[in-house]
Image (cartoon, rainbow, N blue to C red; front, side, top):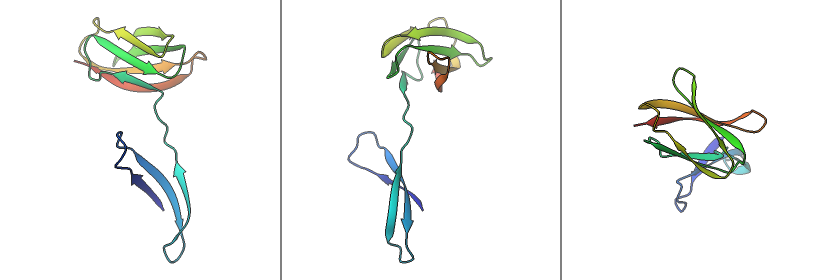
Length: 115
């Protein structure tokens, strides 16, 4: 069986996911927690206006903002754990973003909306 557990004492309202093996009497004989992949970065505010903030645990990455046509409209090197990107030049609408490491591998992607 697969199940989850909610801890009401945590602030993040996270659920833990488990695989549980039971015997014919319904007694638990084995469990294993399934770790969830937590994002390496936080992009905020979303939706946002003229500034986009990035907080990441990965050093020396590139941050790209891509429009709906697939064109990279902003690229910025992030050389510390927190950066701000000026987005005044962008029109209102939905954009995609991605973080790229030094080996040119995409680490994380997401959507961002400009008001």
